[in-house]
Image (cartoon, rainbow, N blue to C red; front, side, top):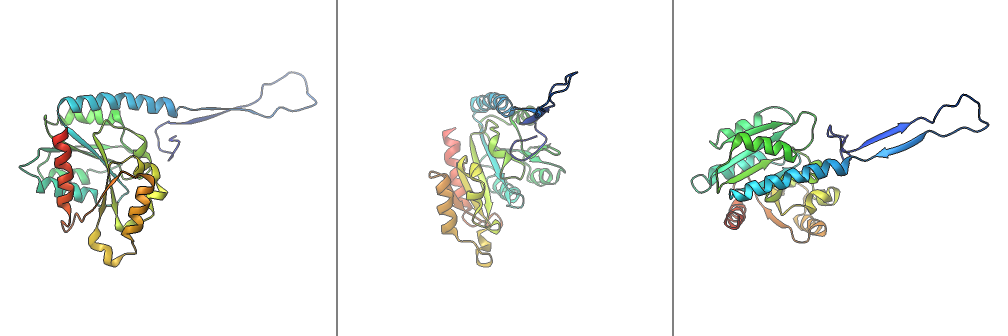
Amino acid sequence: MCATCGCSDETGVRVSEPGHAHPHEHEHSHAPETRTVTLEHDVLAKNDRQAEVNRKSLQDKGILAINVMSSPGSGKTTLLTRTILDLAGELTVSVVEGDQETLLDAERIKATGAPVVQINTGAGCHLDAEMLDRALATLAPPRDSLLFIENVGNLVCPALFDLGESHRAVVMSVTEGPDKPLKYPHMFAGSDLILLNKIDLLPYVDFDVDDFLRDARKVNPGVTVLPVSATTGENLSTWYTWLRTRRVCT
Protein backbone atom coordinates (compact mmCIF):
# COMPACT_ATOMS: atom_id res chain seq x y z
CA MET A 1 0.00 0.00 0.00
CA CYS A 2 1.17 3.53 -0.72
CA ALA A 3 2.60 4.99 2.48
CA THR A 4 0.96 8.33 1.73
CA CYS A 5 -2.43 7.56 0.24
CA GLY A 6 -3.06 3.82 0.39
CA CYS A 7 -3.04 3.25 -3.38
CA SER A 8 -2.18 -0.07 -4.94
CA ASP A 9 1.53 0.72 -5.32
CA GLU A 10 3.32 -1.22 -2.59
CA THR A 11 5.46 1.54 -1.11
CA GLY A 12 5.19 0.20 2.42
CA VAL A 13 4.41 -3.16 4.04
CA ARG A 14 3.83 -3.90 7.70
CA VAL A 15 4.44 -7.46 8.79
CA SER A 16 3.43 -8.88 12.17
CA GLU A 17 4.86 -12.19 13.32
CA PRO A 18 3.45 -14.17 16.25
CA GLY A 19 5.80 -15.22 19.04
CA HIS A 20 7.50 -18.58 18.80
CA ALA A 21 5.73 -21.63 20.18
CA HIS A 22 7.17 -23.79 23.01
CA PRO A 23 6.21 -27.30 24.04
CA HIS A 24 6.46 -26.25 27.71
CA GLU A 25 4.60 -23.63 29.65
CA HIS A 26 6.04 -20.28 30.72
CA GLU A 27 5.07 -18.33 33.78
CA HIS A 28 5.20 -15.23 31.57
CA SER A 29 3.86 -14.56 28.13
CA HIS A 30 5.64 -13.05 25.12
CA ALA A 31 4.10 -10.13 23.30
CA PRO A 32 3.89 -10.76 19.53
CA GLU A 33 7.06 -9.70 17.77
CA THR A 34 6.42 -6.97 15.25
CA ARG A 35 8.80 -5.79 12.59
CA THR A 36 8.21 -3.18 9.91
CA VAL A 37 9.58 -3.77 6.45
CA THR A 38 9.79 -0.48 4.61
CA LEU A 39 9.71 -0.80 0.85
CA GLU A 40 9.04 2.85 0.11
CA HIS A 41 12.73 3.68 -0.33
CA ASP A 42 13.32 0.83 -2.77
CA VAL A 43 10.19 1.59 -4.80
CA LEU A 44 11.03 5.28 -5.09
CA ALA A 45 14.68 4.51 -5.85
CA LYS A 46 13.65 2.22 -8.71
CA ASN A 47 11.26 4.89 -9.97
CA ASP A 48 13.96 7.56 -9.78
CA ARG A 49 16.37 5.44 -11.82
CA GLN A 50 13.79 5.09 -14.60
CA ALA A 51 12.97 8.79 -14.32
CA GLU A 52 16.60 9.66 -15.03
CA VAL A 53 16.53 7.43 -18.09
CA ASN A 54 13.36 9.20 -19.25
CA ARG A 55 14.84 12.61 -18.58
CA LYS A 56 18.02 11.94 -20.54
CA SER A 57 16.06 10.53 -23.48
CA LEU A 58 13.75 13.56 -23.56
CA GLN A 59 16.62 16.02 -23.21
CA ASP A 60 18.61 14.31 -25.96
CA LYS A 61 15.64 14.83 -28.28
CA GLY A 62 15.11 18.44 -27.21
CA ILE A 63 11.66 17.67 -25.80
CA LEU A 64 10.28 20.00 -23.13
CA ALA A 65 8.20 17.80 -20.81
CA ILE A 66 5.78 19.46 -18.37
CA ASN A 67 4.23 17.34 -15.61
CA VAL A 68 0.83 18.99 -15.06
CA MET A 69 -0.74 18.12 -11.70
CA SER A 70 -3.86 19.21 -9.84
CA SER A 71 -6.83 18.05 -7.84
CA PRO A 72 -9.86 16.86 -9.87
CA GLY A 73 -11.91 19.64 -11.40
CA SER A 74 -9.21 22.30 -11.42
CA GLY A 75 -9.53 22.75 -15.18
CA LYS A 76 -6.23 21.29 -16.33
CA THR A 77 -7.71 19.48 -19.36
CA THR A 78 -9.47 22.68 -20.41
CA LEU A 79 -6.19 24.54 -19.96
CA LEU A 80 -4.28 22.03 -22.08
CA THR A 81 -6.83 21.90 -24.90
CA ARG A 82 -6.89 25.70 -25.13
CA THR A 83 -3.09 25.85 -24.98
CA ILE A 84 -2.73 23.34 -27.81
CA LEU A 85 -5.19 25.23 -30.00
CA ASP A 86 -3.72 28.66 -29.24
CA LEU A 87 -0.15 27.51 -29.95
CA ALA A 88 -1.02 25.48 -33.04
CA GLY A 89 1.45 26.24 -35.81
CA GLU A 90 4.00 27.57 -33.33
CA LEU A 91 4.80 24.54 -31.16
CA THR A 92 4.45 20.83 -31.84
CA VAL A 93 2.57 19.39 -28.87
CA SER A 94 1.81 15.85 -27.75
CA VAL A 95 0.13 14.63 -24.56
CA VAL A 96 0.30 11.72 -22.16
CA GLU A 97 -3.06 11.60 -20.41
CA GLY A 98 -3.29 9.96 -16.98
CA ASP A 99 -6.55 9.02 -15.28
CA GLN A 100 -7.94 6.18 -13.24
CA GLU A 101 -10.66 5.25 -15.72
CA THR A 102 -12.27 6.32 -19.05
CA LEU A 103 -10.87 7.91 -22.21
CA LEU A 104 -12.86 11.13 -21.79
CA ASP A 105 -9.94 13.53 -21.31
CA ALA A 106 -7.87 11.83 -24.02
CA GLU A 107 -10.78 12.26 -26.44
CA ARG A 108 -10.88 15.98 -25.64
CA ILE A 109 -7.16 16.26 -26.34
CA LYS A 110 -7.47 14.17 -29.52
CA ALA A 111 -10.11 16.58 -30.83
CA THR A 112 -7.46 19.32 -30.93
CA GLY A 113 -5.41 17.26 -33.39
CA ALA A 114 -2.56 16.65 -30.94
CA PRO A 115 -1.21 13.10 -30.59
CA VAL A 116 -2.24 11.61 -27.24
CA VAL A 117 -1.73 8.39 -25.30
CA GLN A 118 -4.06 7.50 -22.43
CA ILE A 119 -2.81 5.74 -19.30
CA ASN A 120 -5.55 4.33 -17.07
CA THR A 121 -4.14 3.56 -13.63
CA GLY A 122 -7.21 1.76 -12.21
CA ALA A 123 -6.91 2.06 -8.43
CA GLY A 124 -3.55 3.81 -8.73
CA CYS A 125 -3.47 7.47 -7.76
CA HIS A 126 -0.50 8.68 -9.80
CA LEU A 127 1.65 8.09 -12.84
CA ASP A 128 5.14 6.70 -12.39
CA ALA A 129 8.30 6.71 -14.48
CA GLU A 130 7.77 3.22 -15.92
CA MET A 131 4.26 4.16 -17.06
CA LEU A 132 5.66 7.22 -18.80
CA ASP A 133 8.41 5.16 -20.43
CA ARG A 134 5.83 2.80 -21.94
CA ALA A 135 3.64 5.71 -23.04
CA LEU A 136 6.56 7.44 -24.74
CA ALA A 137 7.36 4.28 -26.69
CA THR A 138 3.83 4.41 -28.13
CA LEU A 139 3.52 8.18 -28.50
CA ALA A 140 7.00 8.78 -29.97
CA PRO A 141 6.94 12.59 -29.56
CA PRO A 142 9.03 14.29 -32.24
CA ARG A 143 12.31 16.02 -31.60
CA ASP A 144 12.25 19.64 -30.43
CA SER A 145 8.62 19.45 -29.32
CA LEU A 146 6.50 20.11 -26.24
CA LEU A 147 5.13 17.22 -24.18
CA PHE A 148 2.39 17.67 -21.61
CA ILE A 149 1.95 14.90 -19.03
CA GLU A 150 -1.48 15.30 -17.48
CA ASN A 151 -1.15 13.43 -14.21
CA VAL A 152 -3.93 11.75 -12.24
CA GLY A 153 -6.06 14.28 -10.35
CA ASN A 154 -4.55 14.27 -6.87
CA LEU A 155 -2.52 16.70 -4.76
CA VAL A 156 -0.67 14.02 -2.77
CA CYS A 157 0.84 11.00 -4.55
CA PRO A 158 1.97 12.58 -7.85
CA ALA A 159 4.29 14.83 -5.83
CA LEU A 160 6.32 11.79 -4.74
CA PHE A 161 7.03 10.30 -8.16
CA ASP A 162 9.58 11.85 -10.49
CA LEU A 163 8.66 11.02 -14.09
CA GLY A 164 11.71 12.48 -15.79
CA GLU A 165 9.91 15.72 -16.62
CA SER A 166 11.61 19.03 -17.33
CA HIS A 167 9.29 21.04 -15.09
CA ARG A 168 6.34 20.57 -12.75
CA ALA A 169 3.24 22.75 -12.92
CA VAL A 170 0.30 22.71 -10.51
CA VAL A 171 -3.10 23.89 -11.70
CA MET A 172 -5.03 25.32 -8.74
CA SER A 173 -8.60 26.59 -9.05
CA VAL A 174 -9.95 29.50 -7.02
CA THR A 175 -13.03 27.36 -6.35
CA GLU A 176 -10.89 25.03 -4.21
CA GLY A 177 -10.10 27.57 -1.48
CA PRO A 178 -6.80 29.32 -0.73
CA ASP A 179 -5.46 26.87 1.88
CA LYS A 180 -4.18 24.14 -0.45
CA PRO A 181 -0.44 25.05 -0.32
CA LEU A 182 -0.44 24.61 3.46
CA LYS A 183 -2.57 21.45 3.36
CA TYR A 184 -0.55 19.80 0.57
CA PRO A 185 2.93 21.34 0.96
CA HIS A 186 4.88 18.61 -0.85
CA MET A 187 2.99 19.21 -4.08
CA PHE A 188 3.53 22.97 -4.05
CA ALA A 189 7.08 22.84 -2.68
CA GLY A 190 8.21 20.61 -5.56
CA SER A 191 6.66 22.61 -8.38
CA ASP A 192 8.19 25.24 -10.63
CA LEU A 193 4.89 26.89 -11.53
CA ILE A 194 1.43 27.37 -10.07
CA LEU A 195 -1.34 28.23 -12.50
CA LEU A 196 -4.12 29.84 -10.44
CA ASN A 197 -7.05 29.00 -12.67
CA LYS A 198 -10.67 30.19 -12.95
CA ILE A 199 -9.88 33.75 -11.87
CA ASP A 200 -13.00 34.81 -13.79
CA LEU A 201 -14.92 33.33 -10.82
CA LEU A 202 -13.18 35.43 -8.16
CA PRO A 203 -16.18 37.77 -7.72
CA TYR A 204 -18.33 34.77 -6.79
CA VAL A 205 -16.09 32.79 -4.41
CA ASP A 206 -14.41 33.40 -1.06
CA PHE A 207 -10.80 33.39 -2.22
CA ASP A 208 -8.14 35.88 -1.16
CA VAL A 209 -5.40 35.91 -3.79
CA ASP A 210 -2.93 37.67 -1.49
CA ASP A 211 -3.40 35.01 1.20
CA PHE A 212 -2.87 32.31 -1.39
CA LEU A 213 0.31 33.91 -2.71
CA ARG A 214 1.67 34.35 0.82
CA ASP A 215 1.05 30.69 1.72
CA ALA A 216 2.36 29.37 -1.60
CA ARG A 217 5.63 31.24 -1.06
CA LYS A 218 5.89 29.98 2.51
CA VAL A 219 6.31 26.45 1.18
CA ASN A 220 8.13 27.43 -2.04
CA PRO A 221 9.70 30.90 -1.95
CA GLY A 222 10.86 30.75 -5.57
CA VAL A 223 7.70 29.46 -7.22
CA THR A 224 6.14 31.36 -10.11
CA VAL A 225 2.39 31.98 -9.76
CA LEU A 226 0.33 32.92 -12.82
CA PRO A 227 -3.35 33.81 -12.31
CA VAL A 228 -5.25 32.70 -15.43
CA SER A 229 -8.63 31.70 -16.78
CA ALA A 230 -8.60 28.76 -19.18
CA THR A 231 -12.25 29.48 -20.02
CA THR A 232 -12.04 33.18 -20.89
CA GLY A 233 -8.37 33.24 -21.89
CA GLU A 234 -7.52 35.91 -19.33
CA ASN A 235 -3.76 36.14 -18.72
CA LEU A 236 -3.02 32.97 -20.71
CA SER A 237 -0.38 34.97 -22.57
CA THR A 238 1.75 34.81 -19.39
CA TRP A 239 1.51 31.00 -19.45
CA TYR A 240 2.47 30.89 -23.10
CA THR A 241 5.44 33.18 -22.47
CA TRP A 242 6.56 30.86 -19.65
CA LEU A 243 6.39 27.88 -22.05
CA ARG A 244 8.23 29.71 -24.82
CA THR A 245 11.02 30.73 -22.44
CA ARG A 246 11.51 27.15 -21.22
CA ARG A 247 11.27 25.83 -24.73
CA VAL A 248 14.19 28.01 -25.83
CA CYS A 249 16.24 26.78 -22.86
CA THR A 250 15.62 23.07 -23.57
